[in-house]
Length: 283
Ligand code: PMP
Image (cartoon, rainbow, N blue to C red; front, side):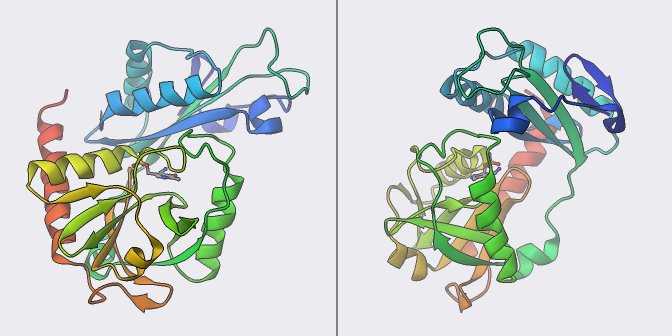
């Protein structure tokens, strides 16, 4: 069951007019929220980022946080699976084709749920592969825009190279992955690119930094040079659906010892403990 403009319905019945500005211009924003044991994870943080994305494109939030929370609970209840991921999508709505904002228009609101499998243990045990490529996206990567063509093309490069993710470099510095944030472990310190207009402020990124601080892992948030990435002891990718995964092969070269490193194992344990705690005590 999906949600579209005020109604729950089977996905096969859901229709959007062809003049929707999401379809015509990619004029909209989205969110992806994991739910574990049917409880949305870090919901307040996801709704805050959604508000920031809406503000950045000058679109009024169609619902209050309380309304979103209720609709999300209903969506979870109407779908199978204890662990689900929720996709929220808001466009500026249906209007005659003209780039400028229409004067009067009702936003289109769509939500769907998909099963959320845990990352396969073998990925955590052996790590995943990645390539590096130039970050050729626009300068507002902090907006969770539905206009994802640049990310689609970058991710396709990774797939065609037989790897799982593309690490993006801009002007000699790491920004993020095509669909993830990237952490670098160098000489015992966890390095992370700073949150700015060149990357999406990941909800998992924030959580990893919080968990690291609470556990006394030294961290440094600041520009990460390409040479530091290539000489890393460990590389991790993070996202709401993939959690934290070690990257063990970059551009065909082993990362550190070519195996998931000790700091990854420590962070994965912290992450799984945190998930378990939150599921016992929903906030
Ligand atoms: N950067 C990009 C470009 C992404 O698409 C994603 C995940 N959708 C992330 C970072 C990770 O964000 P989050 O931890 O909130 O899933």
